[in-house]
Length: 255
Length: 265
Image 1 (tube, each protein chain N blue to C red):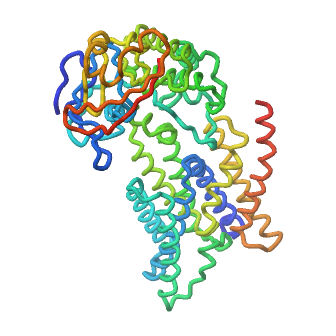
Image 2 (image 1 turned 90 degrees about the vertical axis):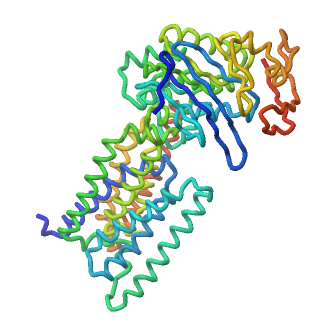
Image 3 (image 1 turned 60 degrees about the vertical axis):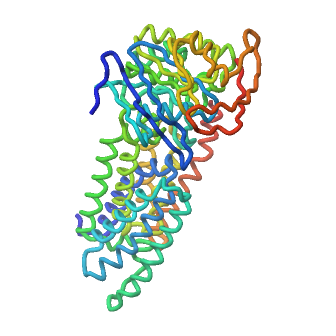
């Protein structure tokens, strides 16, 4: 069993994953240190969610390994959570999974996540924003060392997602946890991250937001000239380093 | 007291109801109805094998139901559409069982007994099997409740909390086989799934939490079991189908309550 460098919470070494014959991820090396905010950006289908699922252990890599610090506690906020309508579930009961918590603790986590007072509501009756904040509250209840969020602001409007990211930053300060998020909202995320990993089947580039946004690989993937205005941009790319083929592939995003 | 066949029938029906009512919630939440059918139908094959070997019926049913449940568990997630696979296994097992019963020759088997159950013929040994099985199902559900619920909600959430959803799914699979063995003499192979699903469906309307739904489901199943037995005695009808009829009535009665609960917000 390999060991982690001190202060690293989790590390992926040489991760490879295929879906059928198609490689989804190839040769991905990454690690997260205590307390940092790392964001994974990349076009649709670039393997962002797959990477997160490899890290939480929901998928096994075909090559490489995931090493966790002993006793690592992960708080996970999935991209979506469909609750079967036959399953009655109040917010309060949801927070009790997988471990039962006290009422005061539950109320505090809800308040920290901006969902105060929702305890008695049914999960299926919540709005998109409320639902995301309740997912976040459940994730912070295990006092995580690492909070992992997969596209946490999907379905939220602009001010909603900006507020959500501010909240993540506050939570990181309160809990002292590291944060790993996947997002396609580049500009919001870029300003809130310590480190950005630009992914497209492999790691195209990584570093501080300044370094990444100046990197040619990033510009190739996401285009330039969207500075300032709320812009919907399309981008055709055909970059082919590392030898796997992203057929002509377009990405629409907005900030 | 156990000398009275009615007392024995009542206890057998009650034991079955308690196990089925609790596990039934997971069958509903995880959409395992077809899975229940496959396992229950396999029980007929178990009956044939047990009688062919001159063994007791319970171990035979439990063994084949377990084998079927494990086979489905192993095959699931291998590409073939799940309900197609279950359809093949379910009806395949039922047909094979019926053929196997016919082939056991010499022994005259009253098939109706195992297809529709006959709780009035339950003996002391049957009662011991039923209540051991029901107690086991109850204890395992109690013990693994939180993990089962987390895995049912979302497999990735379970993984992130260190719970293996495949293992929890295996636990439910094994419990289902146990319930089939418990219920076969009471409601019969064809109606076991009904006893799993209908009380849970009736409980859904009134419940706000999973625990409340499980408790109500157990209650509805017990009411259906004893009510159905009573109904069968009055009308001189078969007990298994009578139990299911009472359960369906409870479900129908719960529907207006659902509308009320939703209207209340």
